[in-house]
Length: 158
Image (cartoon, rainbow, N blue to C red; front, side):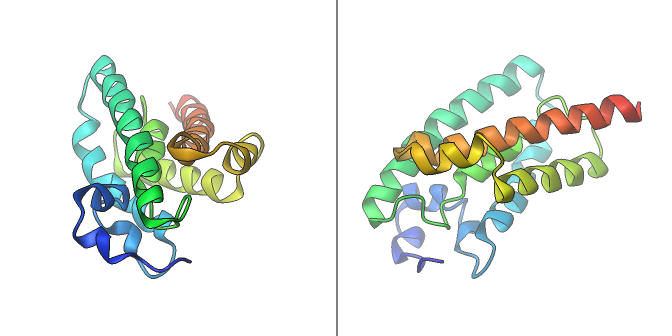
């Protein structure tokens, strides 16, 4: 893993890109970032679907800019500590998820599995698409895969 730049604690853009500091974890920053994303989700889960989708759009667009800017500033494309993409990927996973901690945990695990294993086209996007959009895209795709499985699980459960 790359060294955490000191700017994470001084620059608000870097602080956000590093998931409010969660990406500065000494190991598994993506997992720590996803865990930190649960906290705002506890509020987001009560949004009506249209508002939730607007939140996803806004946080995705902000994320493209945050990740692009931070990676350029620190000179490392997709530094492991940049975890804003994990935040949005997890929130995408949880779109229309049933309420309850078991579903949050299931969404967390599914998202982490897809984000780590990177089945096609996630790995392709991770390797071929650059810039802030590229940093965000693989996690958005992982979030879509995880959301589909979470919805299948919910349909079978209920």
